Length: 424
Ligand code: AMP
Ligand code: GLY
Image 1: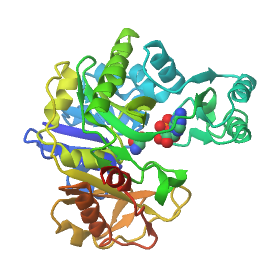
Image 2: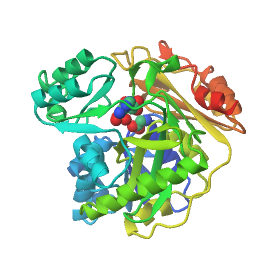
Image 3: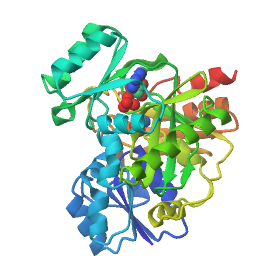
Image 4: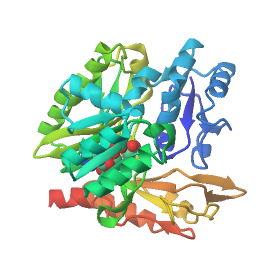
C-alpha cells in the first residue's frame, strides 16, 4: 500500500521510520518532510495546511492511507475533507479535534464527564476574567482558548503577572483569535507525564507512557519550548496510576466525546499532572507527541499500520508489545530557540552516529543543501537511544549527541534525570 504522512518534524520522522518498516507498505510519501525523512520517503512540496492540495495529491497518486502529524490540519478539517473525497485517513474529524483546538471545549467536557482536572473558569470578557483572577489569587494559570503553537499557556506566581498575561492575550490580542476566550485555571503541582492512546471511538489501546521536558534549560528553568527531550517509560506512571489514567481519564473522555456526538478516532494525547498517585488532566492533544513519539516508536514492537487501520475501520482491539528497554530522546536545537535563531548551519557527525547500534537520529528542522545537511528550524534533531536501564539509555544517547556538531547547537544535559532520581 501507499502511505502519505503529513508534517515535517521529529514526530513525523519517527512515524515515517516506523510505518516504513511495515511489510504492507510499498511506497511512502511525506508532505513536506525534512532531510532525514527524505532518506526514507519521497517528499512532496505541499504544506500541511494546503488541505485541497494534499487531497488532490492523495487522489491522483493512489494513496491508500494518510497519517497526519501536526494539529493544525486536523483542526482545519483535513479528515472531513479526505473522507468526503473517499480517501482513507487516520485522525479525528474537525469537531473531535476541538479537544485540542479549544481549551474551553476541553475543560467543559472534562467537567461534564467528571474527569479529574484543575478547577477553572472560562471567559470571553476581559473584566470578568480579571475579577475571577482577583478572587482566586496566585499561583494561577491563564490559557488562551485556541491553538497558539505552545505560547498560549501562561502560569503566574503573582496575581499581577496573571492580569498582565490576561491583557496580553485579550487586550493586545498577541495570539490573535486564539485569545478571544480564555480559561483561568488552578495551578497544579506534581510530576508531569504524557499518556497517549489509540482509539477507534470505542476501544482504547494505550501506547507506552512517556515524559517530556518542556523548559529550555537544565533543571526545568527558562521559557517553555515544544519539548527538549523525552523518555519512555515514565516511572511516575506506576501500574496503579496507569489503571487510574485509563479508567478515570481516557475511557470516560472517549465515551464523553461519543455522547457529545463527536466520536473521537485516532490518537489522543493527554498531558497529565500526577500528585500522590492521582493523575489530573492538563491538556489533551489530538495527535502524537513531539518529542514523546520518538522514544515511543523506538520501543514499539510489531507493525503499526494495522493499528492505524483498525482505528479507521472501528475494529481496534488487543494491546501493543513494547521493547522492555528504556528509550531516551535528546533534542538538539538551534541557539536562541525558542526565540529567534539562525538557520543553514552545516551539521557534522551524523555519519559517525549512523554506525552506532541502538541509536537513531530523528530529524526535525533539517534540510538538504547539496551533499550537506543543514539546520532549518528551532528543534533540529532528536537523538534517541535504547538502554537496558535508564542510565544506559541516557549515557548511550548523550555519547551520540556529543558526536554531532554545528555552529550554535544547544541541548539540555539533564534529559532523563528525573527518572534516574526516582529509580535510585
Ligand atoms: P498545556 O499546553 O496546557 O499542557 O500547558 C503547557 C504546560 O504548562 C504544561 O506542560 C504544564 O507544564 C504547564 N501547565 C498547564 N496547565 C497547568 C496547570 N493547571 N498547573 C500547572 N502547570 C500547568
Ligand atoms: N511534547 C508536547 C507535545 O507534543 O505537545
